[in-house]
Length: 457
Image (cartoon, rainbow, N blue to C red; front, side):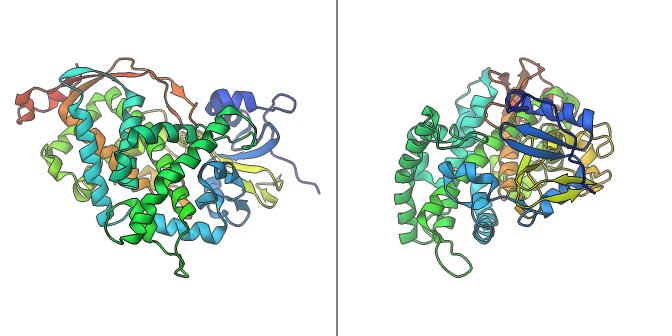
């Protein structure tokens, strides 16, 4: 008996849903789920895909990687940017590189990263003055890039940030999920030139670190000294690629999540008041108290980050390549298709999260712990063995930036209803989006009545 294929989203001949996907892929996935349920298929130009919605399907998606589902085949589109590293590498190499990345975000290294986050954020705050407004994405993306350059690539590159950033943006703008990456398009040519110049910039730094083990306490030093399990050193081009890839996934995704977290806190002043009372108790308004231990004690802020991850995951969907066909819930899923999961839909299923359209960070409190009732229910940072190795870096960065910003200023949303933007491949508030700020009165900083001071003007 021949099995049925998953129900298909109706689209154009040849193109399928590609144009709608490029305009607003979240809307495409929501409408398909409402029409077809938790399993449906979609055509994106020449590529067919099955989309799986819900925690049990997430379990299949994340546990079948390297068996039924292939990461290497899926991530060929990043090779022109970063080379054959991590997700684009062969399985054994990928696992070795992932282990090295995980070690780079642990222990004393993380404390040094937090010190850099404090330094860079304080420098930015010192530039703002007493009152005014800033464009949210521009501010957080720029600050995130400076933190990433300093912490991950070293002070030498941080000093050349004005040279680095335009090249890096040309590299990032060359990412293409659907079109062949070797087409003679201007943005692809800019991407290739940028990759060459960035490599020329970084390789002398790698050589210097390899010649001086232990001299630098940064991410690049960790990679420069790393060896695989057979004790062979990591090739220089792999170090360059991994560093550029980590900066890319770190600063863009962190900046987007940071934007949505702040927006939601300012939209919900009652919860913001509790977050700031907690900061007052834990941090005592001192940057010297910002470290791995105190950031871990900011539990209300941590729950706010989780709620924003749930409601506004910056990665709307993840995809893997079907290296073989499989059967799921009576449907035949062919080899050569993609398999996708979609946190923007799955995070708002009422059978998983109560009142899913309501902002309620306390759903992640120990008493309620809604994310623990179903394994793989919250997947904003991915899941399984390949969960983002830099997630703790990003969480600490957001906590640091928001703590310092909110301690110094009262903030107000100029527009209470931001629109999402999909242009960069991650969901961010559509620029320009302004935040108005005013420095807190000195009496409040010295410890006068707290709760009223945390309500925006």
